[in-house]
Every structure is written in structure tokens, then in C-alpha cells.
Length: 338
Image (cartoon, rainbow, N blue to C red):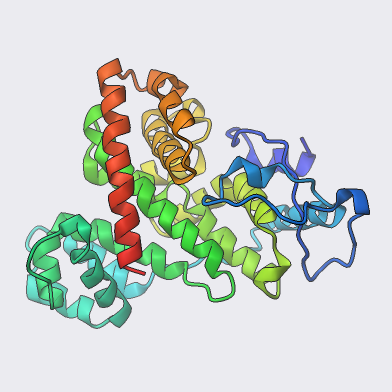
């Protein structure tokens, strides 16, 4: 393992992968040797954690690219995205026991993007009813205060991810995050967790990818300067360390910040290992469902994650069933809210 990577990740590291990729970036003119070039037609994919993205040869220029990003992170020379002030205010207001709904509605309505997205969510399959929510007040009443805080955080993450130049990447990060949140919420009863808390664990444990997308956007001139395998490598190697940084900046709970910092090696998360395992399980469930890997999906029945969470055989099978349903509903919701 390169020394810079070891220093960067410290005690809790993502699983090590032998990964190779091909990409171009504006800061390097080094050209890969002919035998280092990526295949002309990289495999199709539907998830940035797809192992097929991480099995292509890494060109010399791309090693330099990774080292430059690692150096920026070590120096703290990256700009972490902010949560919109209105969204933060709404989250705080919704947590007050005696909040006035009219005041809450007025604050939401002052932000066109937030209001529009919440209306889309309230009319999605998540809250399917025969009557459409036509106003912000309709949406708030349908979602409820507890659900509102959860969805405002989701909308905030989606808003921060908006990127015209890297839209292909941001769309999948958002799909994956919302799906993992939905899956975690669905399986929460089987692992003795609060559904609302589980949703946030699933939604935000990979939040480091949000900040890394901004770093990639800063490093390259256009999306064509990056290959999908290169992006997958950046996400894989750096999302935990940057996730912890972003979670703390957003003033998320100690649990969320800890899980964002360490979830792949969940047993090494000394404070919240069970929460980290729940997030990691939601991640694996979404990964295999999004890739259509039914064999690997069924293989999760005997996974280390299931063992660590102490789940019975019946609970394991029910988790696979409800997770598939949650994945499908999340997919429909993301499409409807696009």
C-alpha cells in the first residue's frame, strides 16, 4: 500500500482492491503506454461500486491524479459543500415539539427547489394516495414532521449533488444514496433499529462521494476527462475519510459522522459497529440489486454482515424480500422526482 494512502486512511480502511482504470485530466500530459491503455469498450455498469469498473489497468498519469487528490485531502485543501441555510432551518424547526406548521410551510415555500422536491416526494410511490398534494402544506401534512426532517436531508443531498458537467456521476450517487436509505429503513425492524435513524444511516454513510464529486469537478475541465473506472477508484479509496470530514461540517450526529468515517470494516468502528454494519448491509443489498446479481444477492444470506448482526435464518430471508421491495420503490421515486 502506498505510504500516502496508509497515512490518509489511518486505522479504518475500505476493503483493498486491485484496481485499474484509464482517464485523462488537465494537470498531466503523461500518456499511457500502449499496453496500459484501457479496453476500447469498458463494461456496462449501473453502480459506481461495480467491481468491473475497478478491474482496468491504471495508467501512470492516473497514479499521479490519485496522489494529487490524496495530497489535497491530507492538507485539507478541498472545499466541502455546504447544506443550504433554508434546509438547515427547516430541519431544526421540524425537530421542535411545538412548531407552527404555518411557519414551517412558509419557510419551505421560500425555497423553490426545496418546495418543488418535497412536492415530488409527497406525490411519489412513498406516499401513494389517490389525492395529489398540490401545495407545500399538503406535502407537509402528508409527510409528517418526523418524515419531513428525513426527506429534507435527502433533498439537501440531492441539491448539493447537482452538477451539469458530471451529471452522469451525480445521478448515480443520488440514486444509490436514496436507495440505501430506503433499504436500511425497511430492514431496520429486523436489526432492532429505529426506521428513521436507519434511513439516515443508509442515506448518508457514503456522503463522502458528494464532496469527492466536487473535487473531481475542480480537477478536470469536463466529464470526458474522467473515465468511469477512474471515478470508481477515487470514490472507493477516499470516500470514508472525506465522509467523516463532511459529516462533521454538516453538524451531523456523532453516530452518523462515525459511520461515514468507517463502515466497510464495520467491526473496527469501536463506537458504532452495529450501525456501521447496518449501513454496510444496505450498501451490499443495493449493490447486488442494482447490478442484477441475483446469485450474489442470495449469497448475502450467509454473509459476515448477517452473522455480525446476529440475525436468524428467517430474519435473513425476510430482509432479502423487504429490501428488494424497498429498492424497487426507491427506484420509482427517484425516477418520478427526476
